[in-house]
Image 1 (cartoon, helix red, strand yellow):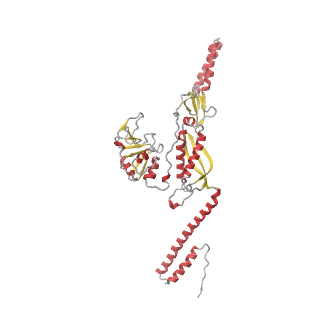
Image 2 (image 1 turned 180 degrees about the vertical axis):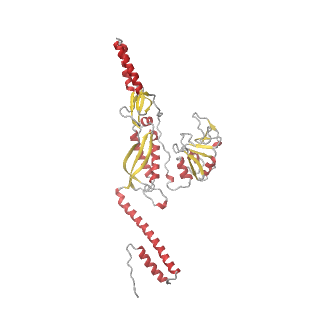
Image 3 (image 1 turned 90 degrees about the vertical axis):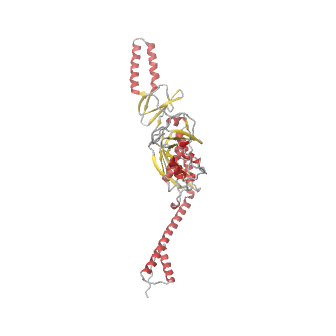
Length: 429
């Protein structure tokens, strides 16, 4: 099955016994009501779920979407601020990103806010409600009022236009030769006015063009092009680069969840996806990305401790770097979506305690390590002593009184738990 919105192949998930399709690109969910009720069984509901298919369809201006399962056009239904797509044949429901949490919030005793669809299923419905899940980053995309969206500008092959201008130049010279000076001057002026229309692009470059202040399109594709000679480039000296670029904001001092100051450094690999949004929605998209990356990093870091014991199940910055990087990437992407940027990857490159507490934290880690090591040694020594006493008793090697057993246990524990190598003393007679 393919997503009805973007055409991406659905990923199939089976969580809490409920099977549903998830689009990795636009985060939409395709699910049937029977499976939706299985997710509802994991939640604390105040009233039973209502099947959206029972709602009356509404008329909208936008084109109807096609059911990813049976291929029929879906109806749109509206209830309590949610517009969902319903298939009348297969009873499937299509939720855009964030609409799944909106739907369940209508029936839950305690609202959880608007969450990404997959985040909602994994953290709220899946029963993994630890301290980390309560602090999931909510969807807060920056909205900028702009109607500009990228589209291609009308252009032609520059070499063809160059050949036509060469013919026009020969005609102009002929006019001068035969005494038609006025016509020759007019043709020469036309040639001069046509020259600025030539544009040369290298691979992974683009030129955003305006015509008397109005955006008329973006020129892409390496080669020699010809466009409207009166069109002006928004960036006349340097074209817009479409290459993947790296942002390194250096090390920053941020307090973690426990209030400990730590130094964190990240790199963000990004590219310009929509040139119109990048140039018209924000003043400088590179500076905008840098500031939003800083903001996202602070929001993510302050939600987690620097380190946590493995047996507690609490996520930490040091122990769960892959999960933290994924959430950091998603947070930055939401912040810069309005600027037409695509975040390819975001990773933590430097993570350490701040210098003022580094020594104290190192001593603390050493103490914890020593305690864990001693605990393991003692547990092993006790089991060895128990095994020795049992073997002596089972094999009838020697019968020991309680006082002798206590003395033997004491000697064995001292020997096995000592930091120094034991020196045996042999008594003769």
